[in-house]
Image (cartoon, rainbow, N blue to C red; front, top):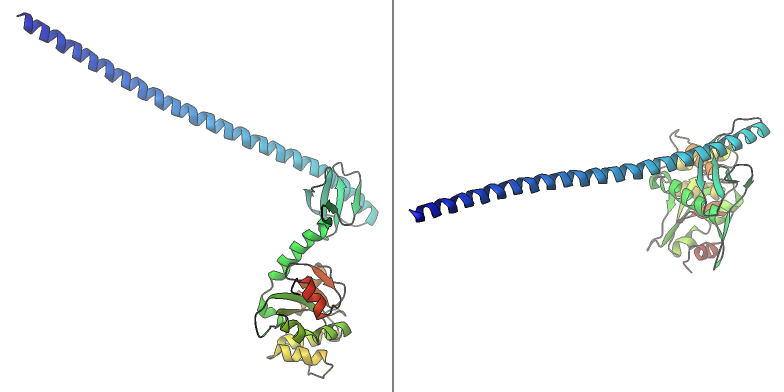
Length: 287
């Protein structure tokens, strides 16, 4: 009888233990879920604070730049008598100096209040000398714009062997120094330099030079026709109406081409005017 009572008590204790453990597990699972939700909530709150701070910073910058833009636009519009618009305002690496780019392409450097500005290039002093920061930016822009032009829209003279580098040349057939440079194409090719021509009629799109350039670009043998024009030979005008002369001329204007030849290196550097083949190779680092 005593054994039966003891067994009943043991069984009752075991049932109570299991019931307690089940409740404890349910509690712990619930707490873990609550903690996970709590942790996610904290993370979400932190992210919201970060983005809110960034938005406020961007808003503050936009407001600050808006004041600068209004001041500069107002002053320039009043002084020129025309409408002046700003394309972009960004910080420079010089403390307190903003780079202001007008839609016309002109770049100004203004104080953060917009009360003073200068027109010109911004230089940085480095251990190895002066660095033209404005020209560095222009080189990147030139390279991007020139690289966007398809090769088949250019007249290209390629080396027979390895092409080590290339130059893109805004050219006109009536230009003496364009003709002089063209006589050195074989020399450039022998140095591994590919010459890519773009059209830039100095007399404008209604000039005789523009018609001759269009004829070269429309010809079946573009290289031969361009060479004949630059050698002073007579070639019948044949403007097919689909030449890229107008768009290339406009690109030259956009890039600041003022005369021909205007040589753009593969890195975007602008070399105005004629340079001998040996000098061009040296600029490209091929000597």
